[in-house]
Length: 340
Ligand code: 5GP
Ligand code: MN
Image (cartoon, rainbow, N blue to C red):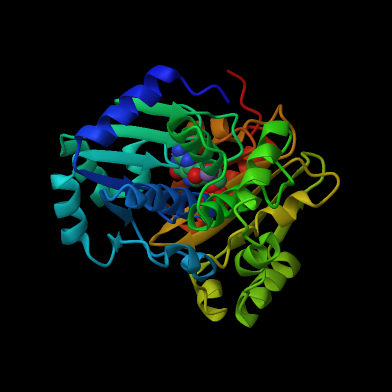
């Protein structure tokens, strides 16, 4: 990853000359969002900066350990405090999201109005413009980008255990434990350096991946056995879940993390989706295992979303039934193969 010297010099200037730094990430924060934000927090905290993380809403329970010793505000629980912090910050770091709208409607308005230095650190396609942009869409994760930025800022390769645990977590969650976005040899050098801090990868993996509740495992079983639709001819599949079904399995934020990937385990399926009724809307997750099926383009064109070529998300405010009907039509029409 080639981090431009002029961007590092400007970031260093911001760090030296400005007092307060605020880090913000996307709505429904995942491992890479929380990991990159908390790693940035630990780094600036070690420089004795006034630093705070703003999370749009609550993080899944499997990621809570990353927030230990991190000064943060959950905007959903304390919006006024989040707004006050944003209105007074000198520097805003936008981590693991490519535009202000990804922080949710209420925070987006605040972000669009404030006047401060802005720094994007991200790996999503087509980012908005910010004062400094560390945007690497071919990178495995925002955490990998953060490691490279720290490396250029400090000329070091090994960082504190707090930082290393956060960055390791983001890389592992965003690559499905190194099963996708994992072809770049440089990524393994980054992981090697994270482990040199002395962190125990097996223990972090246990916290990230093996902390299911019984109801979460039952929900997964139900989704696969009862709510999976397969379209063999189109090599497509999807799972759909209503809010009533989620309630029945005592749904907690994070419980559907990774469920979409089970559809791709089918040998003859290249495109899949998880459609779920959550937060008063229909959330869509798209995945592809064929480079010719660009789900970022599909999500942008039809579902008010975006993301990466092989993994993207979108949303709709129509009913679940309508969304399933429209989406099924798109499968039959091969609309998911979007050409420019
Ligand atoms: P997931 O399906 O896991 O929620 O998201 C897959 C990827 O697409 C993640 O990198 C996520 O950040 C991104 N993503 C999900 N929803 C949206 C969206 O509405 N807009 C954009 N630009 N990216 C999204
Ligand atoms: Mn990410």
